[in-house]
Image (cartoon, rainbow, N blue to C red; front, side, top):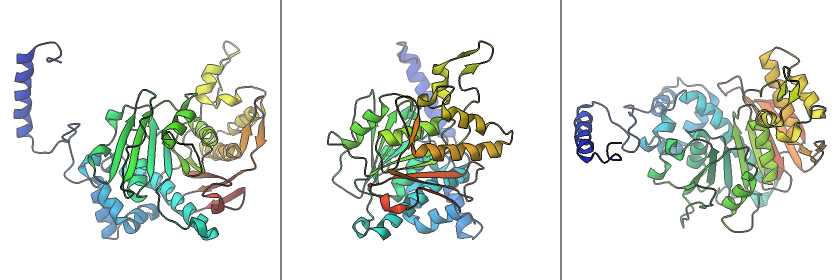
Length: 377
C-alpha cells in the first residue's frame, strides 16, 4: 500500500522489517502465498496411519494402496491447500468416492466393449463444478488419471487455489474474462492439464463457454466429457444436472448436499412469487407453482426428519437426471440416459448418496445396463 501511495522510503523500510521478522520465524511459509506451512502434511500423517494398519476406511485405503504415485504427487508443498486442508480425511473420502466410481465405470465399459479397453485418460475432459478453493476432487483426478484434462469452476478467485502451476506433472491455465484460453498445450501425453473458470454456475451462457473451452476451437463432442458435482448446496445439484444435459456429456456424478430453501421464492407476507429468488434456490425451469415438479418438491418437506428429507431430495434428483424439461416447464422421460443411485458408506458424511447418470452412445454407455437401480456399498 505504501508503494501505491508513492511512499517509497516507507515501503523499503517495511520490506526490511518483513525480512527481519521472516528470519526469526521457526517455521516455513509458502513462498507464493506466505501461508504458514505445517512440518508435515495431513496427507503424510494419514499415510503413516495406513502403513501402521490403523486406517480402515476403504476409500482412504484405495488411494494409498492403489495409487502410491498419486500420493507422492499430492504430498507437495505447492499443494498445501489440498494436503493440509481442514477435515482432510473427510474431504478425501468424499472426493475419492467420485474418483473410485469413475474408475469403476471405465472398467465396466471396457469389459462390455473391447474397443473401450484403452485405459489412458488422454482426450478425456472432467468438469468439476463448484470445486471450492481447495479443488480437492480436481487434484485427485489430475494425480490419479494421468493425461486427463480437468476444468474446475467456482466463484472464488484463482488466487485462492492450490499452486498447481508449480508442480511438474501437470500444466495449468486460467480462463479469465469469458475469453477461452484453452488448456495449456503440451506434446507430452503423460501430463495432466488443469484449467480454472471463475464463473457463476447459474450463468446462462456457461454451457457454450465450457464447450468452446473444451473443444479448443475444434468441433465439440461430449462423448468424453464427465461432469462432477460434489456436495453442491441446494439446487446447485439440480443446475449441475442441467449442465450435464446442455453439454451433452458422457456422464455426471452428483453427491448432493443440503436442500434448497423450502419457500420456493414465495412470500407469505406479500403473497407474491419472485422468480428471481426461486432461480437461486430451485432450478429456474421449474418455477411454476402448479408444476408437477413443485408438487414433488413439496413432498420432500412433508416430513421434519432431515435425514429422510435428504433421502427424498436425492431420489428427486435421481429422477431429474432422467428427465428433460420442455418449453412449457413439463418434464418428459429422457430415454437416452441411464441412471443409478446408491449410498457410499465409506464417505465420512451423512450426505453420502451418489447419483450417476450416463448418456447412451457415449464412451461410458456400456457401464450400466438398467435405467433405474438402487444399491448400497
